[in-house]
Length: 280
Image 1: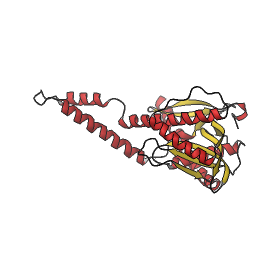
Image 2 (image 1 turned 90 degrees about the horizontal axis):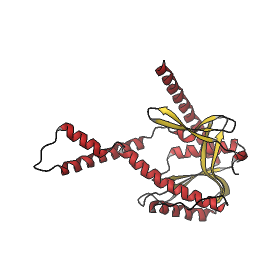
Image 3 (image 1 turned 90 degrees about the vertical axis):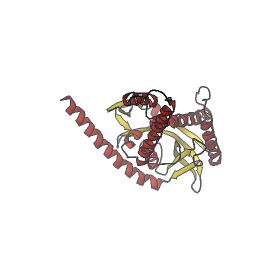
């Protein structure tokens, strides 16, 4: 399976207001569908909120402590206004959790790029020079290589855009491949790469959406499996992990995704109505 019918969907970024954006895909017939990742953003992530708050708190404490140490003991006391202004400048405009997310995303992007580069080279597709990666990304790639050899992975399609006309969504799956999975034997598998400490529920829903779109488009049967492959991005992360999703699980997960899609559609309708009211 290469590009579907020789064409693929085009990506677009959509302004959602309040500084938020989402992604859409335009299919060859001109339809625009929201991306799977944008749809799943409507799912609350309490753990991420707590982590962001704790990270920001730690940054502010560190900045305040450093500023206190920099003030001479016998120096003139700063006014409250001056202290707050100086502290704010030191903290910077970008939030602490956003900085950490950017670092994590960079490592994850590097691993994805290196995996993709090697797979495309194997398929004989035109590729540029090998991506340069940090040591942490290289370490994660080595974990992938060990698993890849053990499962005799054979790539079929890389970074393929898929979409569902019935449910009106689209997305880019990382890899469609033949993989040896115990105890199922050799299987067609839709794979998603993740980096971090764990495989979260949204990743399973994302994979199920890609699988169902692939089936709907006629490029896979209902026997296709899913796999979320988590790569450690730092040495303190848990070991390499693979979560296999059976066809039976895919059916149940997709039902949940359809409900999430309904919530997303409702939130988008509310936002559209707000924009109309604001212009009136």
